[in-house]
Every structure is written in C-alpha cells, then in structure tokens.
Length: 177
Image 1 (cartoon, rainbow, N blue to C red):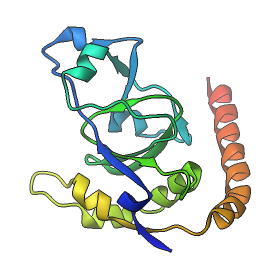
Image 2 (cartoon, helix red, strand yellow; image 1 turned 60 degrees about the horizontal axis):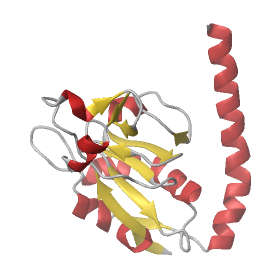
Image 3 (cartoon, rainbow, N blue to C red; image 1 turned 180 degrees about the vertical axis):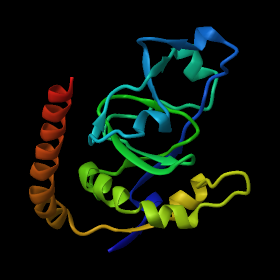
Image 4 (tube, rainbow, N blue to C red; image 1 turned 90 degrees about the vertical axis):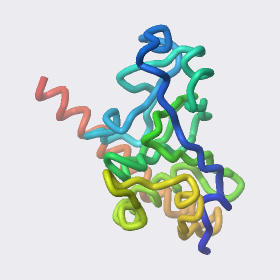
C-alpha cells in the first residue's frame, strides 16, 4: 500500500550549531551525524559520527535529538545516504530523518525502502546552487509499505544477507589493516 512518509512516521530536519562557538562541540556527548559520516559507510546502523555536539549546541541550533531506530536520510550534498540510528543521535541540516511509527512500518524495512529510493529522491530534489529535498517534499514522498506480516517475511531474507555482508566487510577491513 502506498503511504506518504508523513503517514508512517515523523520527518525531522537537522541543524548545525554555530562553529564560532567551540563550546558547542565535543568528543563525547551527543552523537552528531553529517552526510560526510555516511560517505562510504556500509553498515545498516550508526551510533556515532566524526564529531559530537554538546547539550548547549543542541539547544542553540535547529538540530534535534532523534530516538534510536530513526531512519537517517541525507537530503543534500549528496542525496540518498541512509542509515538507522543505533542510539539517540542528532544530524546536521543535510538530513531529513524519519522517526517511524512502528505500528505501521518496521524500521529495518523502511531502511531498505529508503536505500532503494535514492534515484527517486534525486529526481524530486530542487535548488539552483545544489539540489536539496525540503521537509515538505520528503513528507509527501510516497513509498510502498506492505502489511507488517509481509515486512517481517521480507526481512527474514534481507537481514541475514545484510549481516553476512557487514561481517565480510569487517573481515576484509581487518585483512587490509
């Protein structure tokens, strides 16, 4: 069944605390993700990016604290990087994240839907300097979401394959080190 993203979850934009305020940034407080953190990232879940922000940085910017299992989708520069928040996390303005309504969609299922939507997302982006997807456009983006039972059935096939791929990548990384 077709749903707008706003019908199966809440679409939330991110933000960046002022870089002129060094006290807004730290090594270990609130994980803060940028599209650069997802460049070449090949895992389903992410728990931390290159930098963290402080509580003060969160409160003095448009960044929002997202719950675990939020689907992080880069919405500009570039469009279509996707990961699932493993824990509470914040993102910069290069994201339109989805807090899924888990009574309608399984977060891992929505992850795969959004991963396969990259080309469609790029087509609906607008802007003259660089392409971007607004919160409104992302909220109205339509996706096919089957019944919960069908989502579970599909995930029984996809999740073991994904775990095996991630394990193989980790083995390869260890061999290369």
